[in-house]
Length: 600
Image (cartoon, rainbow, N blue to C red; front, side):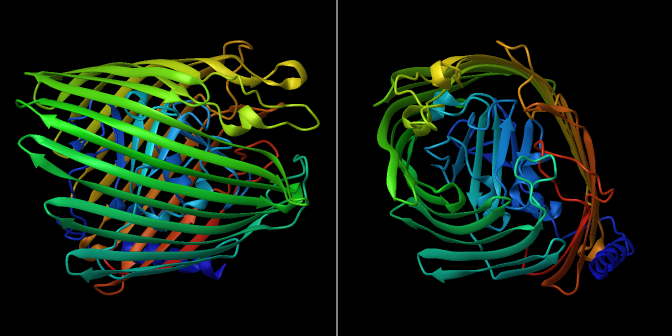
């Protein structure tokens, strides 16, 4: 109760701060995407549906984790089996959790066993900004980008920072970092540690309910280096994390590391290049299931771009991926399955401005050591309407390569076994949209349809994996932003229909409608007060139907001095009882209080 009172006190201080017509603390910067077309361009120049969440956006939201932040965005739905650290699925534009390509500093990070990313193991403290590109991007990136791409850029600090947080469910969190100037090289380090007592992951409807608290403990670090040499810019990131999460049957331990190196710059004339080298590895052990999964992936790509006459840009490149994984039984330990594969690719893109119209085309050829070759690409068109708006349309194809588990797993007693002869899942998507921008406002809306074929389903003899399923997803997304010196308003709407074309049923855990609202009041001197609302409709689950829910959050921030700040947040103020997965609990009303030092 004392924490609730402290939270309310911070909110009262923020709300009572004197108002002014100019707030000097938050300076708006133009938002840039490098993910949509693999080259740097503004959101207005991109011919894709893109959202960029800056570090300022992250700080203003006071979200508890990356999933809470992403779950408020258009086209993204979240499923979670418990509290902090629990296994989570993210659905982008209604696709499966492995239909969104996830990059961290340009490096693929999804598991080679499942094809999905462990979102619970990337703390928000390590994130600088996030790019969300909706719609197929296989023409530039190859496998997995059916629903789109989520690109997470880790932090490079420019000065010291510290944040201490305490809150409900026994939450304790430390974030710290600093920067170093080493002459031609700028360096920074960010570290974090969190310990959450948690709550029971399952309720009595769960298959293994046990009424104890299931906690989560995580530690991580990011080291960033950047500089310039002979006219070429380089940036390097080292990332590591260790996590332990409890569930009603035991616990899982995860150790992960990642490395990314980027080198690029001009080559003379109108030519530029960029080379990316990355590596990611992970080990996950679950003693209760006697299982251990090891995986690693190395990425290497090089791209060349040529800017011809104004409005024209040609991009071409090479890409190579090598990945391997092993599944073991820990009581042996004996190998259940293991394997490796590699993928080589050529890709190219052409962007052309024709007065008030713009065109973009991409094409990629992938040659995989397991399933052979695959061609993908997309075509996009946009036309300006007046000075502040326009329309756009696109069509694209994409695919998802089978995972090691889908190919090689022997299953359980011969049931649910993998299949080495699996082909990739393939998709076709079309989209039409409009967007407009005024001095302080931005509006975007689009409708789309995606058809996915050759979906992998465990429906063969003895439930063996086969390419037999089909799905169709039709949706509408809309985003609105209004920003003034004293206010920040954001709204997003997602309407979608997902359908398993064989059964006629909706795809699991994806609502037909979702609405997100957020408003923040900024006061003179740096105080802030905000609120957010998230509404999600009914969803189907395994032999159950998940009810709709409405979440209300309140947040406040009050400067104690030029460098110190007190922050507070009330989550699920109405104490809504809801499930993101059948039989699993979600957090009730909670309060969090933070003391922060630094520019953030």
